[in-house]
Structure formats: C-alpha cells, structure tokens
Length: 337
Image (cartoon, rainbow, N blue to C red; front, side, top):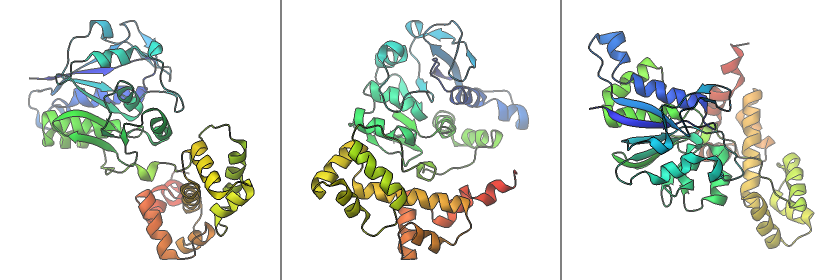
C-alpha cells in the first residue's frame, strides 16, 4: 500500500527543494526497478502538490507550479511535507499571506506526520509543532528562531532532527537538506534497501549529520544600537588584539557588565562569543584563500598555541582546519577554472 504524501506548493516554495523532493519520492520503488532489475514498479509513495488553489503560479525563482489540490479541498494524508521556502530571516510570516499555515494547523494530530526541509521548519514552528522539540533549519534563520520561537530546541549544527524515527515531526537543515529528508522518508516507509538504491540512482553522497561546517558564525542581525555597531566595526579589523572583549568595552565607554548586557541584546551573542565567531570566520577565510600553514593562520587570528587553535576550530565547526581547507579551499575548485 502506497504512502500518501501532500507536498506544500506555495509561491514561497523553493523550486529545487519542492521538485527535488517530488522527483526522489516518486522514484522510490520505480527507478531502480526500471534501470537495474527489470522488476515491475512498486511505488512507495503517492505524492501530490497541495497549494492555495489549483491555479498555476510562479514561485520566487520564476518556475511555474500547478498544485494538484487546494488546501481547502485536501483530504487527510499520511505525511505532509513542507519544502524549503523563500522567507524573511528577520520577520515571522504573516498568516494572511501564508494559507499553508492554517492548513498545517488543521491536520489531525497522530494521523498525519508533518516534516520539513530547510526553512520549511519556520511553518512548523509558527503553528507550534516544534515547541519543546529538537529541530533544525537553515543556519541563516537561527536568529529568527531564537527571537520568535524560543520554545524550539534549535540545533542548526545538525543536518536532520527527529525524536522518534517512526512518528512525530522531522526537520532537515540547509538548502540541499531535502536530500537527507527524502532518504529518511524512503528508509522509514520503504526500507533501508530502497533508500540505498535511491542514493545510488540520485548520486546522493553521505554528508554526515553536521550542518556546522557549512554555516557562517557571523550573520547580519539588524539592530538600532549605534554604539554596539561601532564596536562590531572595530572588532572586525582588530580581532587578533590581546583581550579584545576588554578593549571593546573600554572603547564603548560603558561598564563591562553594562556593555556585555547591551551587546547581547543587540546581537544575540555575548561579546566573548562574538569575538570567537569573528576569529573563526576569518580563519576559515584564510584557509579557503591561502596556502598559509595552519599554525600561522591561528596566530593571525589571535591564537598563539597551534594545538589549542586546532581543537577550538574543530569544536566550533565540526572539522579540523585541514579538513575545512580540503572541503572549501582553492585546491577543490581550481580544477574548474
């Protein structure tokens, strides 16, 4: 018996996530049989697109989408999938502009499993499905979750989050996190062998569980505190100085405790964590664009002890400096030039 899936298709949908999920899920139980065994197709899923109406529209990237069924007419399904969405990373979605939210809220608990890819997790958080739950999303939306959905146990370092493989919400992180979500669904409802076959047909590499190597530790967080903005601008060019947090507080003219409290309110990070993030990001940049030894890069960003720098880098990014250079450095991409 096939598993019924309704895949949310709205004007905010990411075309790559929406159609990537559609193609891989529809192919489970079909493509391997066609290409390799010659056995009759035995589809795992029946996938349909559900949207505001069945009238075609163009998503943010300009691709034409025609939902199979409207939210108001959709019947129950086994799994509801929210793909990656083009949403603001500063503001919550307005329910009046996102009818998919009310549809998700109406789904019968325990009957329909709700899962999301990338920023689709915003929809799940907005309707309360992630309260008290460990979940992930694209790393650039971390600040939005911290401010607007504090009850979510956010793990942007993870590539896939679920409490129970057999039931409950599932979230995947990152723009191409839909691939891991697709393999999860195929394994859960079609078995590990079908998931392995899908990975082979679609050439889906094992990216591991971590999203941290791909994320930026410094992101633009709008705020109105001009004094804190000045200290941020200063530390961007002076991150290697001795006692950078003390220097930032001194330059602000505020008592250290007042400065720390005001800095966290404006940026979402303590001054110490912010300096650490700036240093790690600069180290990443140097690893990606130069051939300088790791020890020299550590010194350049403020760490004189090379072993300590390597341990700190691995703890914060999930990779050693050498592994980061191999994954994102010039050697990898120079062959394309």
